[in-house]
Amino acid sequence: MLLVICLFCVQSASAQTGANARLTPPQTEDFPRISIFLDVSDAQGKFMHGLQAADVTIHEDGEALPLVEFQELRPGVQLVIALNPGRPFVIRDSQGFSRYDLIIQSLAEWAQRRLGSSLDDLSLLVTNGPERSHVSNPLELFYVLEEYQVSEQSSGSGIDVLLQAVELAGDPTPRPGMERMVLFVTAPLEGDLSFALQNVIDRARQRSVHVYVWLVAPPEAFLTRTADDLIRLAGETGGQFAAFSSDEIIPDLETYLDPLRDIYFIAYDSKIKAGGQHELKAVISTEKEVIASPPQAFEFDLRPPNLAFLLPELEIVREPTAEKSASASPEASLYPQEVGVQVLFDFPDGRPRPVAYSALYVDEQVVHENRAEPFDQFTWDLQAYNQSGQHILRAEAIDSLGLRGSTIDTPVVLQVKRPAASLLTGLTRHIPVIAGVMVGLSGLVLVLVMIVGGRIRPDPHRTPRRKRRPKNDPTLQPVKVKSGASGRRGLGWTNRLQWSDKRHIPKACAHLSRLVPGDQTSASALYAITANEVTIGRDARQAMLVLDDASVDGLHARLVRQEDGSFQLFDEGSVAGTWLNYSPVPSTGARLHHGDLLLFGRVGFCFNLPEGQIQRKPVVHLEDAWA
Image 1: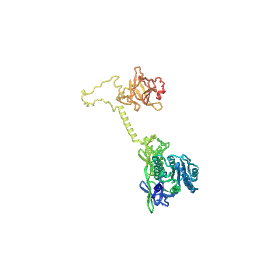
Image 2: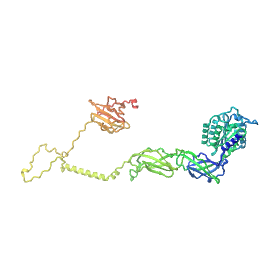
Image 3: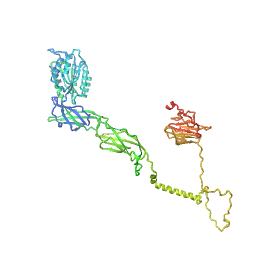
Image 4: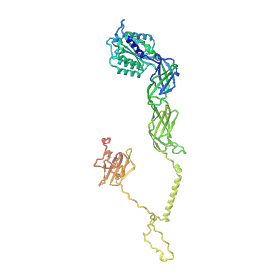
């Protein structure tokens, strides 16, 4: 009698004692529209029908939001029956029926009442026994159980089949909003399974699975620690616990399923502006009471949009067009005058949403804004760019949630080739300059004519003019002396000009011709060797031939003229090395011949002798070149 009273108290404790509400995890695939299901039960554990949208309020992160959609649905239940048989299953009563026979009879009666209904999704798992998954006809499960024979040796821990049942109940449901339920019919579990059962509880709560437990055992097993663990399992997952020892009435499975088949569907527009942890709560206001659901916490991933340029032009050349009007300025005749820029939008959080604003920046200055579609296309006006240079492009966008994203800074090289102006146009634009030059030239011609005519004597050493002698003083009059045959006959107009002395320019012993891409020599980069020793490097304080290149050392190499007139090339311990015809110069130096190719780091020269000696054919050592 005491055991029966205790069993009644246990079953009553597992029943619901008041009205309650529960929210399922939200569905955020259509963000900012969020969908969620609401289960509301009265004090007797029955589903509360007839609620209206005005009776329900959704609180997102503490803010009450209006409902966009509210509907009562009957999607059914995804049920998994998990059997863990043992020796207590085969114990028979006074009429010869085993406990397993009575359980099968109860399930068969339920299956007969549900005959023809395909509302629920049904599965069956048996420890070391048959399995069936996701069927709609209840009789299919009954036929499997009827053919299965339980023996005294049929036993197991039960935890494995229970975990498998929770995972199976968590599979995607045939219809949205279906509740998930596991009916665990088990013999007493052996050993300390507190940790294993806590793992089952955690997984069931993560998947919103209700676990109902039927403990099949003799009455003395109802007050064991195993029974307490199973009662906690049912209570913490929203299920119920029942014990059966042949004298008790087996609960009707329909009483578990019917309250779970109905649910409310809710949709609302979220106000979430950032990713992270968020919280939902439903408040139901009826004439009798106010019911608040426990907070439903969920993790939400929300990130700014990513932008990327679609095949950007990394080099743009502005050059003259084939046709231009006579009145057009040189800048207006350059093409292109604008370029189109397109970007791609990507939402890394997997939630595509509209774009509200986009802009194109060039060198941190806005050159194009979009406040309406299309947001992915820009125009860059190039008419104001008349000089070659590099520019930095960046695009930004703001989505409908106010989140801002941008592309990476992309360098673009702009080359401007100015048109060749006509002679008439050039003369017209430079009339003042031309007039000044003409006046200057006229003045120079006039001065030259006066010098030739003897009017001007450009003698910088001429003595000051003496005082005029009186004409009446015969002692002070100059005496005329005849000059010889070679007297002033040689003093022509050319001798009246003072010519400057010509400087002596030493003769070049050899030349170094700078190499440009394509293995060609550049006449503008010609260095004449006039000294017996020439130092080469990047430091002007140490080198006579200065090479402005990062691969050249401060003092890189030395070129020395020998007594026989030949030249010897030495490396001064440079990092990049000195190369003769693609071979490194040894420490003892190397003799140069006409036409040799010299490399100082990455800077190349061609060595030429003025006599034009026979050029030595370069020999390329592949192993050194590849090294």
